[in-house]
Image (cartoon, rainbow, N blue to C red; front, side, top):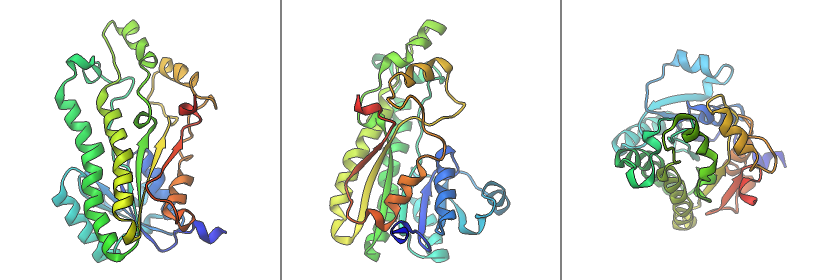
Length: 272
């Protein structure tokens, strides 16, 4: 049974693998014996890798590439293949969002929402997944195997509850509306996952989505957390490493008959 969940010796690409959740995914896969290629917008030295990933740094390389640049993705993928071979796993994790404690301008009412913020979030969260899947996934399809794991959100399944953010206007006197762009980008991943899952099924490349709920960090206002937890049946946010298991599941042969699926991991938020 343990072998079903093994990723030993496999090559995994994790976009945004130096971020909050990306670090967890990269570390977890490396600890399980995978070779992890992190695609990052910023350069990262071997010394920095050793400091950030003690004990597993030999299993981790960082390749400089933005998910919004197909040319950079192509170059990074060719370097990776030369180093370790064609990837077996792709975790499309890179993404951006405006936080509950972010600027009101980035969360303006829909009627006045600046297009520049729409473009930034759609380019990274949706177009970036398409481009990375196009570049890395095509190599997987040529090799006749692979697992692509798209990182989604509960806001790809349900609309943001604006009552969670009402405290900002009361506190600051400026309207604060959770913006449309993040929800639109993550809901787009739902059908992109189905599309690619069926498109590459005959090539034995599986494509699945994980819709995550909130994760415990220090980056949220107390008022938001209190309101949010009232709407979570388990009455808590996920721990920082609590999503690693489902990543490992979808990366391994334990999920060999799954494609085009959405796995919701949200403490029950979308069940109410």
